[in-house]
View 1 (tube, protein in one colour):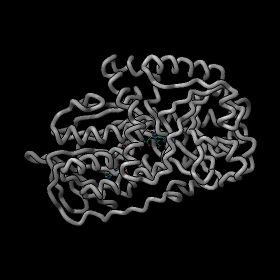
View 2 (spheres, rainbow, N blue to C red):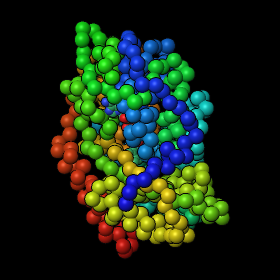
View 3 (cartoon, rainbow, N blue to C red):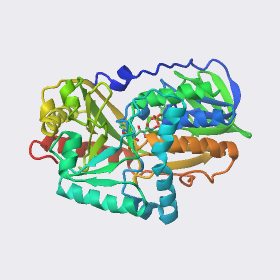
View 4 (cartoon, helix red, strand yellow):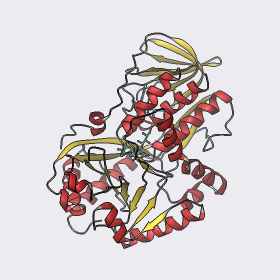
Length: 425
Ligand SMILES: Cc1cc2nc3c(=O)[nH]c(=O)nc-3n(C[C@H](O)[C@H](O)[C@H](O)COP(=O)(O)OP(=O)(O)OC[C@H]3O[C@@H](n4cnc5c(N)ncnc54)[C@H](O)[C@@H]3O)c2cc1C
């Protein structure tokens, strides 16, 4: 299967570009990477009146931010009790509290900055793919309700009515969440940051960053930018920076295919409420529609790798099983991206030098964490206090055998997708 085109690049209505770097300078904050994290930080810093420069090697949203599903989730992928078990009571609840408020933060930025990104704050459905999946959702419901989250467990009938599919045993509805056109959101953040006074540059690959005296010196295209503070916001797409540090992540591929727009009558039957969905299977799948009425199906797997044909054939079969009405609708777009997982699935902030942070490892949940972490890190660097950070920065984070762990996910996805001829897994 040829990975031909990313739907988000074709359908984005936000038109923005920024020139490559053409001069050196001095700033309060320099940011490397133009995804949700870096752009949110640039916007926050500029709104606070700081001088800020952001350098992006390709174009805004080139990384995970312009390739993702667009599910605006109110938390991590881990169930709440596991977050607490891994982080401890105080730190775990603190992080979950910050992320629970993530969607409202994202919706309010979209409204305040008038970002045209197909924002659909109509909730998400976590779909039970089996009886054991439904039990998993009941456990998540209990843990969420104990924390005061407004979750609702839907039975099979109501789930079927909302999804337009009889394939699921029930669903956990989260009314705080929703969907966006992710690349448009990233581009909208860039436009807002520029309006607020940030200096943004695309097609500007940072090749070196070093600490010199009290400053960071960031080098790109032969120019030096000096700054007291530095944010490394390259996440899974870190590329070629001579820094003596790189974020340790487990890279996991996720692919999506988008159909031609559904016929009008089916649009009133299938996800008519606009909810974004993913299921409880170990090798999970996602389903959502866009404003044009396309069905977008996604799953873990590398569409460009050796297992690409298996993944593409699986997507066709899976769609026909969940939505027999769409069995003959052609796929028009196919793309993939790299998720930055961490071994414990908890996002990290690493303080890799004086006044310097790297923020990464959102483990497939980066729209709200990218926005929340980026905003908080800009404030922390400018105010010189870590009190507002959603997680405690660590001096170092290591991943054991990261490439091997990534290969393990891919092998699991290929095997799972190859054998899914029978009942839905
Ligand atoms: C396929 C897929 C589906 C996903 N689905 C969802 C979802 O539905 N909901 C959700 O919340 N999250 C989802 N995620 C996760 C989310 O997209 C990411 O966590 C988020 O985009 C990370 O944002 P970021 O700004 O930290 O990094 P990125 O968006 O990856 O940005 C990093 C940037 O750094 C730049 N860069 C790298 N090296 C250099 C250099 N040397 N100089 C300058 N720039 C450099 C890159 O070009 C890139 O643009 C998904 C991710 C993927 C890949």
